Image 1 (cartoon, helix red, strand yellow):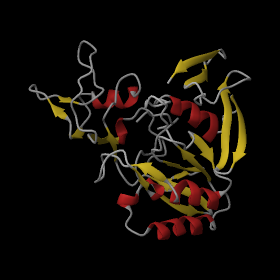
Image 2 (tube, rainbow, N blue to C red):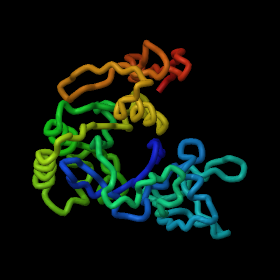
Image 3 (tube, one colour):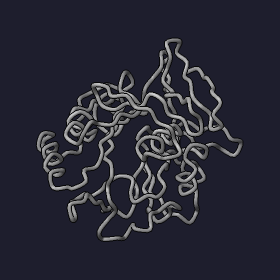
Amino acid sequence: MTMIADTVVGDDLALVRDFNREARAVNPEVSMFGIIDDVNPEDDPEIYRVLTDPEAEVIFSNVLLTEEGDVWWRGKPDEQGREVPPSHPNARFTVSVRHLAKLDPRIDDPLGVPVSAFVFGGKDFTAWPPVEEAFDWDHGIATKGAALESERTAAVLGRVGEVEFNPFAILDFLSISPGAFAELHFRFARRLEKVPKVFGVNYFLRGRDGGYLAEKRDKRVWRSGWSSGSTETRMLSRPQRGGYRFTKICAGCSTGSSGRSSASGSTRRCSPSGSRSSSRS
């Protein structure tokens, strides 16, 4: 759960409605509810700081309880820096958003914050690209949301890791049919003057050895370089059948690299200085 945003309004739920023909969202909760498995000080410094703050009130579930009364989860190191493995894959934490250093100053604004993009993500280890932008709203809702397939997680019943049809990646939590939920999205955009962009993301591509090709920190590049349209980042996109897919992206250099796996199984990236590097997946 890497906090890659400039500021945070919420991490889970959002109530989105049209106000003056603009999509705006509010956070209906006062807390964040996240998976704690593999939260560590290197990849998740903001969340790790909150979870280990003795002044922060935190609700833990499915974690390991030590004899001293402390909580432990996979990814949390001991005093010697060694990882202590036991905890449930669906171990969770709940904590007030007020503890976040990046809390958006408009957190209590009754008009909410403007919404410029809808991002749908699933766990597809085979083919779905890291980032893809839909051609338009309807195309995005249909192909990035309603038609989404994803690996089953430990948060739901069934065998973990099996790929299943999972519209909007929330099939187990929908209170209406997926078709009715999709129709709500189609109708919603017709009331807007500026329709948000739609993206599909996938952080879970695997290489031939079964290991992930990307890591948590790669989200920073995908988010800042594509979704936000940063002027400091060079982007080249190419239309595919599924949407606009970035082929090269690099902050600070003119060549760029998509970070995609080559035929040999290696992954090429650009360093911040513009020099290129290669690493095996």
